[in-house]
Image (cartoon, rainbow, N blue to C red; front, top):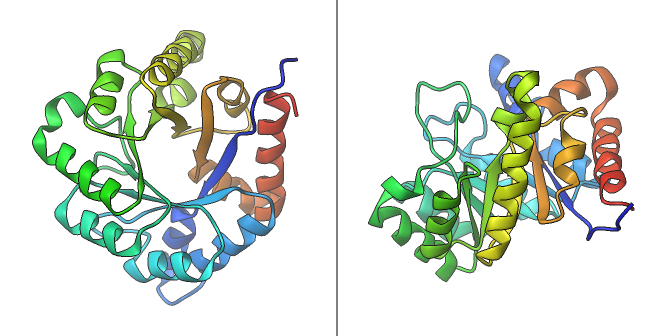
Amino acid sequence: MTLLPPMRLSVNVDHVATLRNARGGHFPSPVDAARLVMQAGADGVTVHLREDRRHIRDEDVRRIAREVETRLNFEMAATDEMVAIACELKPPACCLVPEKRQELTTEGGLDVLKAGADLKAAVAKLADAGVEVSIFIEADARQIEAAAAIGAHAIELHTGTYAEGPLDQREAQLARLVAGAKAAAGCGLKVHAGHGLSFETLPPVAAIPEVVEASIGHFLISASVFEGLPTVVRRMKGLINNARGH
């Protein structure tokens, strides 16, 4: 097996906050979850502060940024409000995502081609604040080239269609991701991947040489109900290392 460079696992703790918010109060705490996943071997923590604050809240983000030793990846819509928060907090990384109030979860990649000057301005403001800017997009060459053209440092490939789509289309969707990762690297972009990944679907993505980070949330937190959070984090990290030849 070819030895690939190490790849990061960033654990999205949004749905620890979902569980907390179902009853109100303070338990379970996404801040405590962030500490625990780092102790278990994760390489970073992802949080998505949505406009409607349906799970992660402002104070969660601030406390994780302040109290947890981690590579915080701040998922956000490219709105004035979120750009201002990110520029204040200056997390190591952010990921710009499309956001619709009525959706259950992010439904697809951001359309960079149609986003216009506002997206380019948001990228520039974040970059000027010292934040590594990623854009969550489909594995489409035109979208990838557009992301590079507006100054993004990285892209996060939307893996949901591959991971959650029909089994008879999975191989073709994986090939799309492979081609997208190569195209992004050719544009000078770092390549991340995320959405819908599981124990089964993560290894082929982790074996893509250009992918340097995977962000996993809902499946990982859900599996933790049965196996425990540290166990699941270690298992995910082991799958990544095996796929990379480590």
